[in-house]
Image (tube, rainbow, N blue to C red; front, side, top):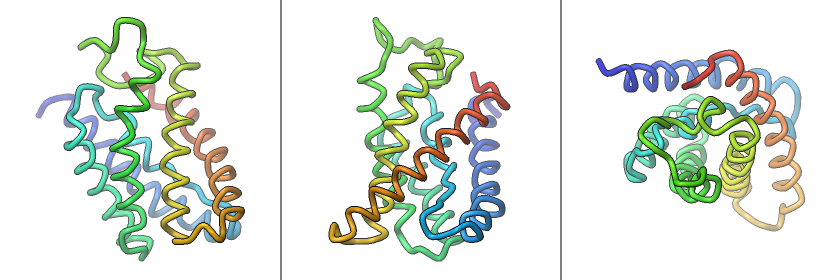
Length: 171
């Protein structure tokens, strides 16, 4: 099996298990406004040159599996597909001078530096989380609640992303 495929399959399974077995329990134990959402790291770290349609399909698959575990039909699927759709646009904004090369397989700190990676991750997670909470509430009447949940979840997700990238040194 190709090393890129194997690493992405392992990342998919690891983040799925962490999200459903650990972070789901921690989020429900802490409170209403505290959500730990780490699984979008998987879509963010897909190869740069992957077609957008493939990223959307893989992101939707991750979302469907998370939805089954959370009993939230379509909410995580919608957010994952949306953020996978936005991913190439976000990467285009932060791409290095001259664009991404074949030697830059994933947008990781190893290839783009920590500052650029954290900027990309923050914008990506913001899009994912804002969409997720908007679809979850399903009305902008709760805009304050949606914004507060997005900001808190973004802060937690960015800390987890930094820890994940430091531990696993994704190349």
